[in-house]
Amino acid sequence: QVQLVESGGGLVQPGASLSVSCAASGRAFRSYAMAWFRQAPGKAREFVARVDLYRRTSYAASVKGRVTISRDNAKNTVYLQMSSLKLEDTAVYYCAADRSGSAYVARIGEYDYWGQGTQVTVSS
Image (cartoon, rainbow, N blue to C red; front, side, top):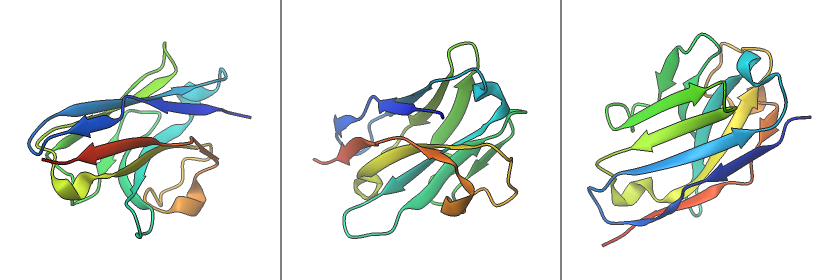
């Protein structure tokens, strides 16, 4: 069993930058693909970004160029750095882990473990 704990959310103004982190338990972290999803009020959970065990990255079109996902296997941690934040980036951001390395990077059902989420609010 893997536990994922997100941190770093908060309230920022439009145009600001913010980083969120996800710490994972267990020694198998380096073998998992890790991703960030988000869910805004009244909307479905959506894919944001993913980094696989080879550090290849994928991004949703809505955030590409403004978001960077990275991982530190020594710390069992995955990061999401966000810049030029917009009002529509407001959501709960969830960390997820994929044991099998699915090719369907944006599909929620491909992920085996989920964190509890961290709130990111962009407001003026």
